Image 1: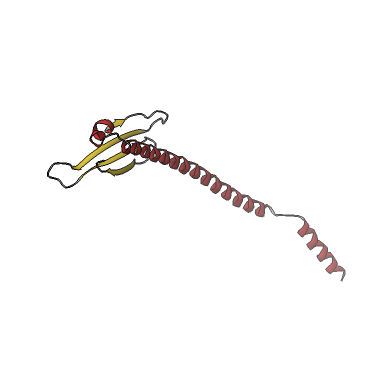
Image 2: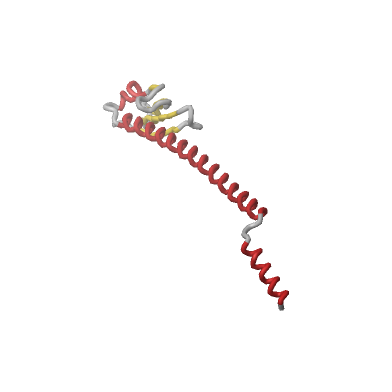
Length: 139
């Protein structure tokens, strides 16, 4: 019985000593991997948020232009007033906006007459352009 008490005490001492060096290294490696993954996620989230914000701004600029064209005083003046390319838009650095109007029909022999208005907004930092289209009939 004396020997079993010594073995039990030795086991208790080992249990109280704490973690081994290998366990600490494995735990730190796991923690480092998790932190690296979180850092990469944060960078990606920031980039995608910035891209989405630019696309939303471009979409709003296209919508604004379409609303201005819709409020034209005369149907016949839409082309002369609104077809243009704006290389810079006040308050929106880097954005460019192009407005195009295509007339369908409109001749004396045609039974249809409408205009297709397309607004395209670009920015060098965006991949692709935002394009919005609407149809306006004579009023």
